[in-house]
Length: 506
Image (cartoon, rainbow, N blue to C red):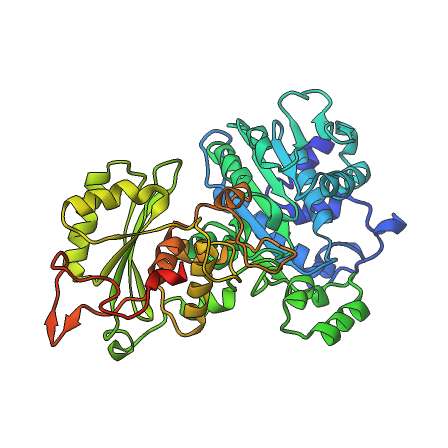
């Protein structure tokens, strides 16, 4: 009889939550009063808060629309919630787990959180707490403790289960191979801002068959990474249902504490945005370039007279390994454009020919190439009579405030953005610019995190941003003397007769 009852809630997670837990008889659950219109639908004085009711009802409508027949795969259901503190995110993770596991025989799920401590002491602890109160709780065996957190159906434990996995990047394979072709494969991310991109990417493999679902909850502590992209990019908003929850709108939060934070830090401060308003910060704690500056430059319209007078600088950030891209761009004064993005290419002559054609087409005044993988390209260019320049990011900076040339160039690029620079509406470039963080140093010298450390956080190599940064390596003037344009290969030099050594900045 109970199994038949569960069938009624297959596409009704809110109905399940109201039916499965003893809201009016358990003193521990008599906390949040059910609000209209739900207080008129369910015979209970207590239940989930408004935002949770809205989310659960929306999920139910999507399930009904998908109309999974138990055989033919349907589109993945994806929902993400960013919020302030104290709204009850861990509780709703437990409700979703209990709903899926109770209404879908053979369901398989994975739950993770930002840290092992968060996963065991909060996220999984809430799942254990609510499952023990759930009307179907006796169907499942629950195990706790680090490394042994699982919920398995007593009669079919190998095919009907939910496990907890830590989200360390080296543990990514634990999220692979989860499939439930005739049921639901689901993933649930708690404190999703700090879950590496790699983990989410591997989990996507479990959304290819059956009735797959993915849920992400968290505070907006980082404005980079996949969780932030859900709310910021067109692709993210297209694939995910999203919700932003202000802690002040939730019944259980400490309003006096929230008001104190607002008074102390200001309503528009990043502290309040993250902890109260359920927003992403303009700038994370160690972030080097702020979202505010990049937002202002993103697609900024410039009049021709604002940049046409300036030199044209073509740049190339090569790529020889992994999934990095080779990027060619051009900056003219306050305007930057990405000209070409191709996969890694170790054919120096081929890339040099492409770069030479672009130099000629745009009548560029200088060409700068990142020395990391660019020495062969520059050598090939010189064999064609090209006067290209290598930029060594790792070299020591002549500016004592910067650890190396990379730090110096990124600082110049940041100041260029603040001064009115314009970048194309390229979401990958946007992500690249706000990605790198500052490495704290006791001497105060500017040091940016290494690319390998960015990749460890799940971020790609910032090739597009590096292509822009390279353009600040040397001062360049237009190749015009006495009204005559000097074309590439005709003896023009980058310094154009300047009486100082431009290499001094490097």
